[in-house]
Image (cartoon, rainbow, N blue to C red; front, top):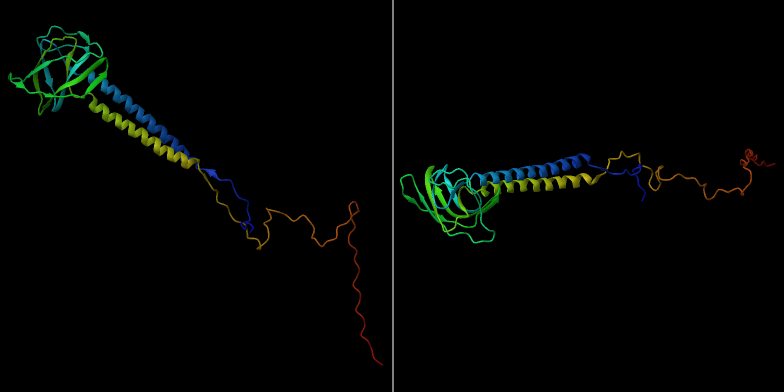
Length: 256
């Protein structure tokens, strides 16, 4: 059956608006995620650097600000800063040989009244940032801010005890947020780009319909003469068809 629309088909076009929005969403998600990830890495390094430290063989005073859980790390690489207590070996660096077992250490924590505070054993938490390497050994949970004195005893001296909140706490959270934003940007932006690349048909205004069984004028034009029309011989000059006037009718017959 012939196409009755009366107009030729049109070439579909792309959704340029969706394509542009998809690219913006994709790039925005990736860039935002990368910025948050870099910021999280910087916060992680700063948190490690700000840990309070105590060397072996002396009493060090610590100020615990806030409440929650504080972790005691055996730090095998780093540097001792300014200390509060009876330690003379400040501003010294240490670097325990990589692969060597952690040293055996005894920690004694006293409150402001001289009473010993019980510490909880802890493993599985570590850090490696800003030139410091540490592994958790004890934790302390506080319900209020306070000042304590820590005594560190060990046969080894190539390490220190670092105390503070887990540096990876905020870092892991920020990294997951960055990953989520980047993935969301990739997924949403990718879907919009796919929809924008897909072609859409342009609406066509139909022409008046043609009689059933005939072809629209834009499809074909009749260029051949009817089959029952005599064709002049090839090369013959064109001559218009002859015309004769109609003959008058015969008179009616008469009787005698």
